[in-house]
Amino acid sequence: MEKKYRKFYVDWWQIKRSTIIGGAAIIVLLAILGGGGWWLWRNDFFLAKQDLTEMPKDAARIVSFEGDVRIIRAATRETILVTRTTYVSAGDTIQTQTDGRAQVRMIDGSTLSIRPNSTVVIRDSASIFGGTNVRVSLDDGQINVKTPDQTEQTENVVEVQESENRVFAQTDASLKINEQKNGGEIRISRGGVETNVGGEKIVIQENEFAAVSNGKITPKERLLDAPKQVAPTNSEQISSTSDVSFRWQKPESNSAVSFHLQIAKSPFFVADAVIIERENLTNQIFTLANLAPGTYYWRLRASAESGQTSDWGEPFKFTVIKQISSQTLEAGEWQVEAVGGGIYLVNGRTQPGATVRIGGREIFAAADGSFRLQISTKSPTAAVEINDERGNRSRYNLNLTTVKAVRQ
Image (cartoon, rainbow, N blue to C red):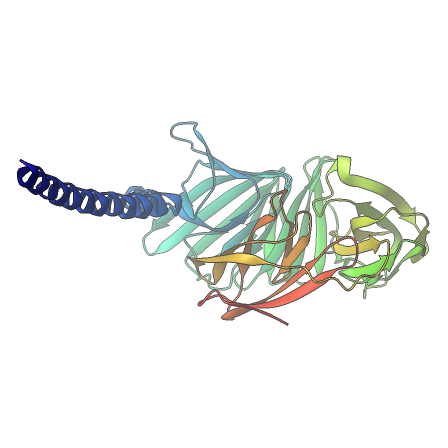
């Protein structure tokens, strides 16, 4: 009886072991399939395939975006939060929020860059008899239009207030809604546009400005550039024991008579984040004392005697620190996703609250230290700078292909 019991025990153990091994194999297989499916879903693989098959003929594409960007579909009135490259059809509306920007590639090869707090309606996007018709309406905010590849068969029109602006080839133009003056503004950096207001046509050319208000267009004048910011320099660190002196130079056109300065805690200069605002400054220096430690942003624009106001200059960031420290900031868990067209999504983790700057773009690390930043570059590597309010900083060289970060 003892021998039979032992034999039965061995047979039972053999059955159980094979069952365990088979079960483990099944679990591993399911985990791989589940993980692969999750990765495909997270990277919008299935949705991307669906978009390609459902994209209407002659639709434009949002090829780059950041922040909160939304599309209102004309056919369904559905509001879509943009999370990946997608299409925009005639009749659709694009809205950018305070932190939102979008770049749209139109069917004629032109590029539409939509600034924050803007609303743009795609009026027409069609190819007819070998040519293309592109028409958009700026309802609010500001857009930049570039037409590097436009042909003679292209009709590219931007509606601003009561005006229709036909954009020529090889043009770089900025069009804006001025809410304070209840009108529109047209700035041409390169090329030109033909503006039609109530049947009156005028050609605005390179380095020229004109405004539209109450059904009329103002006389053209020389384009007023933004002031050149001198100090604090971008990403400069300043001791909290020192006064902060903001200095700038007049635009090259030298027609500015006053300046508008904003200092904020946010790079988007939302109303709640602006801590200092000074208009009608005639000097080119402004000093601020007792600024608390933290990260700040400042920007300027100029006004001419004619009433023309320049665009805002690009914001400069500076940090007020308690004392200079030599502590290094660690970063890891790097992930790089190639979106296409030289656009990458970079993820990582560092000290919570630290500022991460890559390719001229920056973001604050979240409470858990994680960060996610979209950059555009043609280089296989990207320089990463991380700093905090205490003056600690680290630099990395990130390989976008191998996802290997080397401390500099």
